[in-house]
Length: 335
Ligand code: ATP
Ligand code: LTN
Image (cartoon, rainbow, N blue to C red; front, side, top):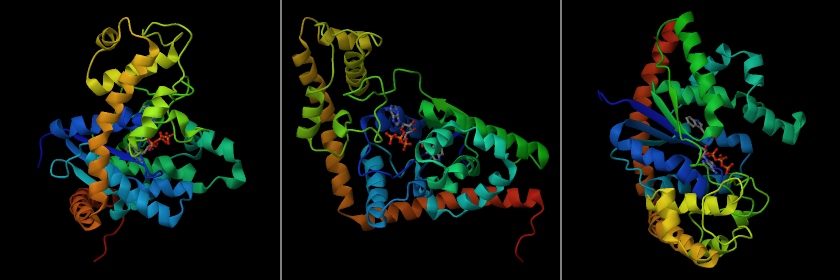
């Protein structure tokens, strides 16, 4: 067995493309952690069912998500990459978590409160309410030490810790208590058109979102039309120059330069030159990744083979945890 710490994370296959925020806020860390950790990464298709996806699109988006993760640098030889629904233990442990969680504590989850407030009770599915218990199962099945996610997932990780501790004291010490691996502010990427809101698919307009599967011309155009300010200096100042600061964050993160170094690259230059520079970096960064993802999608048999191996590796770990959990609770195993 590996002596490395374990990490687990998941991403929903809800769109045709991941965006720059998903990459810089989450997947970039996944790629880095696969070297130093025993890493499990899953495309959480069951979570995405809460959005009632169209079946034909959903099938495509799930495979496209896998292709993008590999193209972005996940190496299936080095990490365990799988689709959540391929390991039924996720649903099984989720039920156990639902029987441990209080109705009150589940009702306090802000993601549920926000999303259900937007759609109204009659149009909110129960799966959105039980979503955090399925996420806890995802994490606890693998005895993960760390969970790399964006800031918005902190409360779900806290709930997972509480449920694990509750189980361990009520029944038996089965679960590792996980910690969030959450980036500091600054790694949060904002909408190019509204640099005070996070870059998000749920935004009203697509103009402020950089999708990695979009054609280079589209992304260049979006960056060149990014909102800035009436000054002239390329300087990081989140409060007064949110647009420029966001572009500097993006430029620095993709070139591995500090903010000071990034500012220096554009000293004495105007906003036009700055945007051209950022657009070049973004487009050149994503060009080979998009090509690689498209190439992978031409051979679904190969992708399915990778996913089969992933599901087998994940399943072995998950089934052991599920068995120990059932045993500790007094469930009789099938003869
Ligand atoms: P969106 O709301 O844009 O559809 P999301 O948060 O719903 O994005 P998820 O699949 O839920 O997308 O999240 C994938 C990962 O990307 C999460 O860990 C999330 O924290 C991170 N993430 C999403 N948007 C950003 C952003 N703008 N900046 C940094 N991280 C982000
Ligand atoms: N809720 C997460 C996606 C997610 C996840 C997980 C992340 C589902 N299961 C397990 C980490 C670990 C999100 O919306 N980003």
